[in-house]
Image (tube, rainbow, N blue to C red):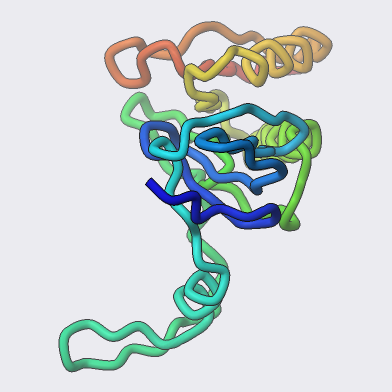
Length: 179
């Protein structure tokens, strides 16, 4: 396979979620930077991204069959919704939150998620809610650890694993205690 990657190219991964930027090429190996981390990949593991096409897809009109639909610039629906247990769900996955600037570091992304969780707790308190579910996902456990640290410091909260049937191991249920 001919090497079609150059330094600066955007790529996505064939068998992984995410994308990164090519920072080095050596034969059939390509070094890709994702956030603050870089890793070598085989050529066959990567899919090139076309910057021009990304721009067209995100900013141009969308054609569906013969119907032209103009993209609407409205904010995304909030990721806070009523949970099946009667508590509000707050999905902290990055794709569910308001977007960060391009090139945000992993640390900035984590801070963004924690800020959103704090905001949701404050809103729940002010609206008199008693419970909410923070969906952090399984991942590496870093977000969960940081959420637990944050929740532990607040004497007005109690937290525990949310329903395994509904959320698996990827959520914490937060109970807001009366003061």
